[in-house]
Length: 295
Image (cartoon, rainbow, N blue to C red):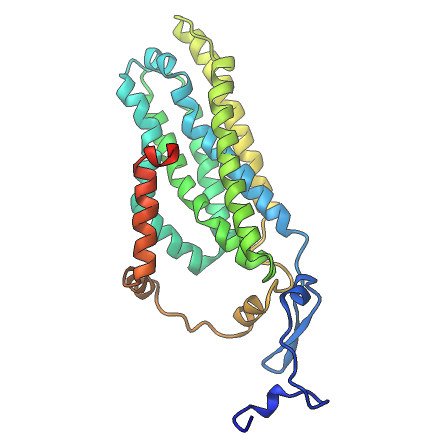
């Protein structure tokens, strides 16, 4: 009892109670940071941010798989091999490997809104580039458009956890992170499903190159139009952070000057962490061995 901090005692002589997570769940508490009161309140806009992320992910996944759905038609139109068409999907995986860490650094440095705008802008740009590939000799143009879209998807995949921490309260972070991740995955799943369903409906298998160009133009223009609408939606709806911090941790982050270590030193620290390495190995093996899902 002699070593207890007097500040831990209330006016009635009993230890003051630490605010419970249930209190923070109401998001109406006020905390004092650096001599001023900061209102902690969850914004209603947080669910709009998750919805935009899901739509954004769905749109990008549609562009990823749209060529594979009618592989033989694009082979015939452009006069290329099946291997070349397959690489229009594989470039997504190839782009993710070298760009993951740089985009994660950009996310930490410039914030959610900048990354969301950059990703949606690239997605929109790639869709419009592919509109200009409606001639049999313009296969390199459609490759360029697909590569731009593959870069855009790297900006999407790192956003769920950041949205959860910035926009949701302390008692909602885990739930919100799982919702954001699953909405991202469900958005991609729906986009993949639409990517397999819509192209065969819009582009019939005919031998006339001019006819194929016409039907492909319908597909590409619809794709570019939806990408443009989502870009406008990100501009108008998606914000960097809520008006009021969503948790005590966020309120401190807003108030205090950042003293975080450099991004490179953080990466080095992670790879020295045994728990992190075990997680990387187990998660990587799970995705490399499809049989794990069957057991």
